[in-house]
Image (cartoon, rainbow, N blue to C red):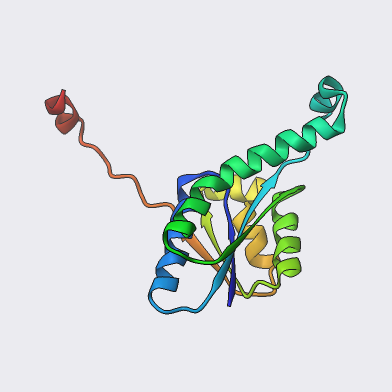
Amino acid sequence: MKILLPVDGSTVSLDAVRFAIRMAQEGLACSMVLANVQEPATLYELMVAHDPQVIEEVSAAAGANTLAAAEALLEQANIAFESEVAMGDPAHTLIDILENFGCDLVVMGASGTSPLRSALLGSVSNEVLHAANVPVMIIKAAPTPDIDEAEFDEAQ
């Protein structure tokens, strides 16, 4: 089984990587594809850079840097993986990567944006969930514990 792990540098995307590692350690025979999608350059960036090659190099370096923590986790767990940095609309590009690498499952984090924001703007995880032709497992961000103001004052 080949698992696509989209990584955007967020804590929840690394939580998804850790979850996939746990599945492998529990006996799932699999390899992983780490993917980072860089947004296309803005018109301003294109005008300032003057050279599209520079923008591509910077995007590739940023993507590789974003994947570094996830790659370290997989190397430490001794799990086979491939890495892909691409540029484009995140959801559509992830679907392309999914198909190009022949992945059987997507395990990805969801930031837990508000329902209104998600409805208005959409979310990458929601778009991938509906567009993918394979199962998609969404790992939600862990809720942050509420801190009682009295406890906070006592701690200071």
